[in-house]
Image 1 (cartoon, rainbow, N blue to C red):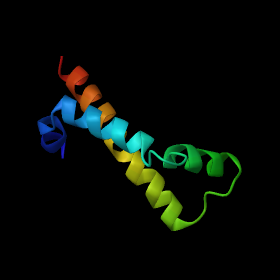
Image 2: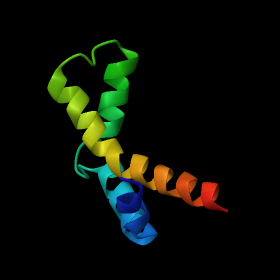
Image 3: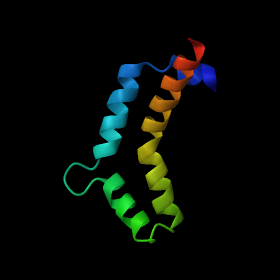
Image 4: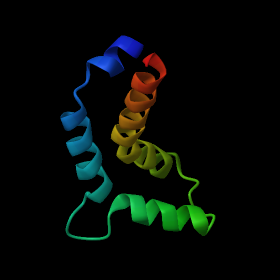
Length: 73
């Protein structure tokens, strides 16, 4: 898994992370909506939790890649 994450280019991960953070662009972004649900204690449906994970995945990969590259130095 480490080699897969290390093989992902930073620009691609950055673009994916920004895109998924602000999607959908017309209404309220899903991350904002899910965060509001979490703060209200209403984030309990499996679909909502999966949606939150899906929108956070590129950011998780970007942060993981960054820390793996820092660990090697």
